[in-house]
Length: 79
Image (cartoon, rainbow, N blue to C red; front, side, top):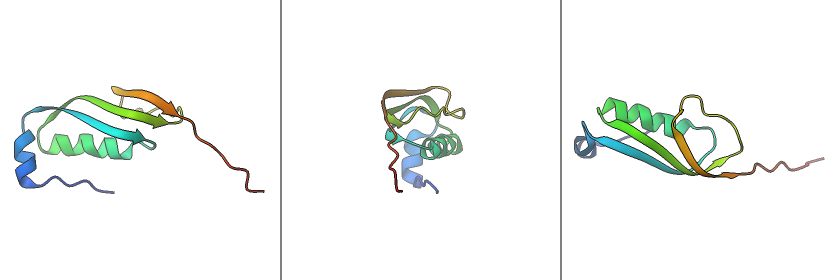
């Protein structure tokens, strides 16, 4: 998985403080990549928000992550 930010957009946020917002987090990979991308363009992430996280798994690489709610993980019985 990769995230891309074009040159003109990266120039807009270079040296700025940013807030990252996502709708749902499950593995945390998109948010982690977003943090890495902000570092590359020299933007400072001051807060990370998600509307919902799936399950109760911790996200050790995202210690300041703020979630508004939790979505349960449903398992189906396939037997």
